[in-house]
Amino acid sequence: MQNRQAITILAALAQESRLAVYRLLVEHAPEGLAASAIAEKLGLPNATLSFHLKELSHAGLVSSRQSGRFIYYAPVMEAMDELVGYLTDHCCSQSGGTCAPARRVTAGKRRPASA
Image 1 (tube, rainbow, N blue to C red):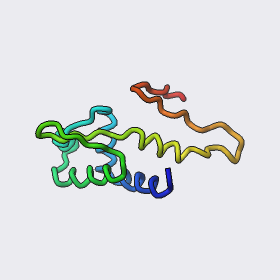
Image 2 (tube, rainbow, N blue to C red):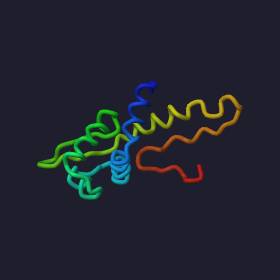
Image 3 (cartoon, rainbow, N blue to C red):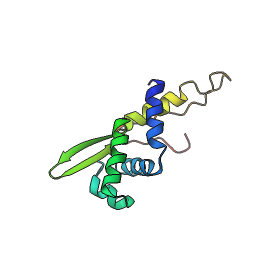
Image 4 (tube, rainbow, N blue to C red):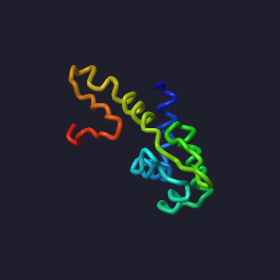
């Protein structure tokens, strides 16, 4: 990941509604939610939600798919994994420690909270 990509992702999440949308989608990963369900759960007008989803999509944090009349949005978990990796790649490198957090396990497995 390059600096510009990290800045784009962080900027997209640095807004209350977009952060709420992303966190909601993470709760419903990997399938995601229909845009109408997101709007209902978060109490956002459709036009406002559309704007925020566009920003999250532009940052590479969400993907969309059409199913009938509905558009479903899902989080791109790899993008967040890359961001966390980018932010922690050199963790403790100057102090000689080994504090870097463990990478998230994919395929539905979660790392322990104490890790």
